[in-house]
Length: 335
Ligand SMILES: *[C@@H]1O[C@H](CO)[C@@H](O)[C@H](O)[C@H]1NC(C)=O
Image 1 (cartoon, rainbow, N blue to C red):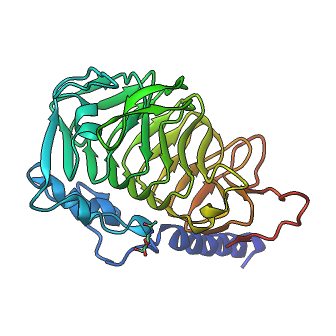
Image 2 (cartoon, rainbow, N blue to C red; image 1 turned 180 degrees about the horizontal axis):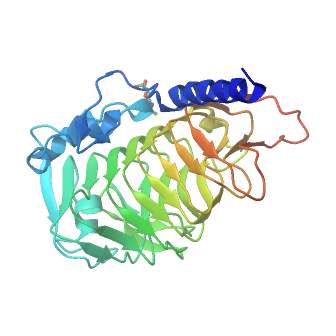
């Protein structure tokens, strides 16, 4: 055989190995793949989407989560309140019945929020989502855009699914209905699409996040047990921050799963950028970057598994970026 033939056989072999490595869903507990109209669905989607009657069984979604958020079964059960958003308007302190804020901040206990139809919601102030709240945008086009966006502040057991959140802008301090249904004073807020502050057991799935003033997703101040799955992140400089403060050592306990997401086009950096904690980053697709894909500082741990990194045609080809802390030699683990 000529050298060229051997060479091409070798390349085929390498490609097969690479394909197997990349496309084997390591997170799968069930190996059965479900095909609908020739689509192969991941473990989360095949859990509910396979059923054409999913609209009649919306709460099934809560059992489909994977990773550190665990199963979201605290969000469903016999005392679940079903609430439908019928009014795209917003009043930050006295939300009217029918608005998103009334369902997400005012109603306490388990609430499952759906939407009457397609909606464009311009929030007057950040939306503070209460514990045990699910926002389910399946089947409709919901845009939360052009002003304030979402915040999970000292809350647990929250599902955010199927929203398009974009063009989020910074907000001046002011009064807003808190997650406990009472008006609170909220300080200055950067323009992030979704911001977690001391939040736990949070599942962010199937959202489209882009073009915000600050970042797309911040996990901060002791937030943990978070799964970020099936989201499309695009058109953003600073995409995702896990831990915002070098001095905030409580973030050592932070655990975040980032799986089945699509990054790009035009994401520059931080997919994610992590401080202190631990992130499992698996089965994501990176369509280029400008500075780096995954980075961090303050000795975090990160396991990158079965991701597909498509390097940009110009600029930095390096996938990772590690910042040394205060002249201390880079010792953090990147697996
Ligand atoms: C995070 O999840 C683990 C495992 O379920 C649990 O033991 C821990 O208490 C959770 N942490 C918080 C802050 O909720």
